[in-house]
Each structure stands twice: as C-alpha cells, then as structure tokens.
Length: 258
Ligand code: ADP
Image (cartoon, rainbow, N blue to C red; front, side, top):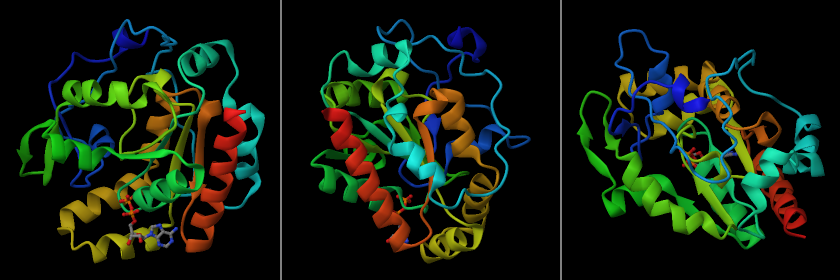
C-alpha cells in the first residue's frame, strides 16, 4: 500500500512556479524531507506502492526515435485493468502530464501540444501563483512553498473531463488516476545549462536544477509514481525534436480519443 510506505505528510511542498525542482532535494543530503503524498481512498487509484524499487535508469537523456515509437503505440494507453479503471471511467479524452527539470521545455512543448491537439493547457506553476495555492516564499530555495491540498482541490474539476495537458516540474503527488500519459522531457546537460543561464538563476539554483537533470530525478519520480507503461521520456534538445514530440503526442491523443 503506497500510503503506508510514505512518510507522514508535511504540509506544503517547496518547488513551485519559481522553478526549482522539488524532487532533487529528496536525495540531497542534509536537506529536510518534505515529500508530498497523494490523496488516499480516491476511487480509481491503483493502490500501487510508490516506493517500490525504481531507478536503474542510466544516462542523462534518451535519444533517438525508437522509444518514441513505443510512446504512440496503443500499448501506451496502458490498458492493464488498473489503468483502464484509472483513466477511462470519467473521460473520453486523455489527460497528459508534461514534466521534467525546469528549463527542459515543458511549457513550450505542453502549450504547443495543447494547441495542436485541441486540448486545454494547464500550467500548474502559474495556477499556484495566480490562485495563491502556497504557504509563502522559501528564501533558501528561492521558490514558493506549494500547498498541495489547495492545488489538488483546485485542479480536480479541471482535469475530471479529460483533454488537459498539465505542465509541472514535479509529478509524485498528483492522483495517479488523473493521467493517461506522463511525458518526461530530457535535455543534454550543456543545453540545459545554456537555457538556465539565460534565466539568470542564482548559482545554487542553477546547480540544483542541473543536478536534478543529471541524476534523472524527474524520470525516476515519474516511474515510481505511475505505471511504467504510461511514462515516456523524450529528448527535447532542439526545435526539431520538440516539433516531432508535439506532432507525435497530438496523434497519440487523437488515437486515444477514438
Ligand atoms: P520549462 O517549462 O521546462 O521550464 P520552457 O518551455 O520555459 O521550459 O523552455 C525554456 C527555454 O528553452 C525557453 O526559452 C524555450 O523557448 C526554450 N526551449 C524549450 N524547448 C526547446 C527545444 N526543444 N529546443 C530549443 N529551445 C527550446
């Protein structure tokens, strides 16, 4: 049972819209553990333990198109009984979560995907700021402290009908049933460094996020939090790769809805 394997809930979670990936700190020595926890007892949850053995994902980023092909195959709909229960009960269109380290291109890709697929784009970081779904500012990590309860309450109705592309740099606290596909964007280290440098992050924040990407933090988090068959990592180093991703994901969404 997932909930039992997780630590008691700490209210609030760092790492919201100001772009510091919260997941990295889980593995950072000396940093206080402030993990979120999914809601319990929600119909449609698979009950899978999130702390089951994960990892084993070597390398910085996967390249090439072979794995992408897998992403658009019907198998990617994850039609195991648990996922069917979780994904198709209340919606006729899929929800897609686009996640990854800050700077990998989530917002650009997710917005383009939403437009191409005729879906709604939901930028969670912006939502948190706009609706003040946080407990203030964390000056150490230079980010807002996310109030998960408020955020999940706010999002529940928005995703219920499907057809939403959600963009956020963490993924382990959303109810598993919300998503039919979890896309983890990846970029090469030097590419990410260049993008984050343009954002004029502090050296600490830049280093934190670089480490997050190098250590596969978001990919591991996604694979520990969702069925592996619905988690897809995609390279997004170039505009060409992003356009290919958008095209293929939009087709996947269209196929899912049929
Ligand atoms: P995130 O939402 O993950 O923080 P953004 O979508 O804001 O990332 O992208 C960060 C920067 O990188 C932006 O300037 C964006 O235009 C650029 N970018 C995003 N994806 C790509 C890509 N595939 N190729 C080149 N530049 C990209």
